[in-house]
Image 1 (cartoon, rainbow, N blue to C red):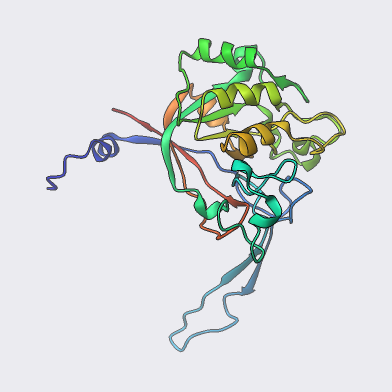
Image 2 (cartoon, rainbow, N blue to C red; image 1 turned 135 degrees about the vertical axis):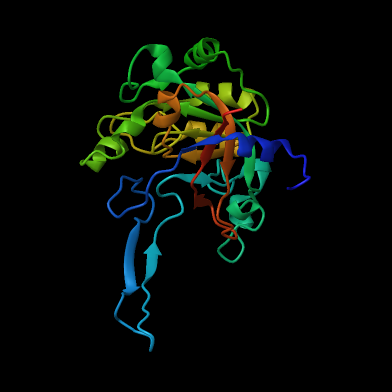
Length: 276
């Protein structure tokens, strides 16, 4: 028997419920048109080469943008007036086709307190309306209803309910080009920045309120959170399981791929809730 006195191990031994907050990656999934689509193929299939003992193996080749599916935005992802977070010149920060200082490889693995703000539950609806802007008043009301106050360094996840459309046969529904997509605008982003989270996430294709027919033409929440505040953004999350279970506070775990100098990474974030 181990003599280690580790509260985290004790919690694991006592039982932990894991909520998978990531989306499956598959060809044809909804995504921003600004990024290369996910494709998958098998360059070698079983039987293409058979070993003397009868063994065979298959392998894969994938091609995708780093902002496709559930992913995290690095601070190199967005600039404003030619400047990245901290005032770095966006053009000069790119060296040899990579961002050595603000690339996704600089995001350390995240193990922090997570807080879910379930906005539709506060509004008394199943899903926020298309293009609905989640306001600071909505966020304040959600905090009061849930009784869980975000603290500096947390990961704050804002649920709009729009994630229910991810698996819609018409991928344009989730993208919301014609209808728009609910989410925080500039005011909501400033509310979040005022709580100084380490990262913020949402169940939408972009961490933004997207107006009908406007797509990603303006991204004020990205400017406020990434550029001005240095807060990482996680997009296209699956938050419905947490909401259905009434879980608003949990241990949040995420580790980006260490893609040197890249502007983002696909991720599979987890919410862990101890039974103890």
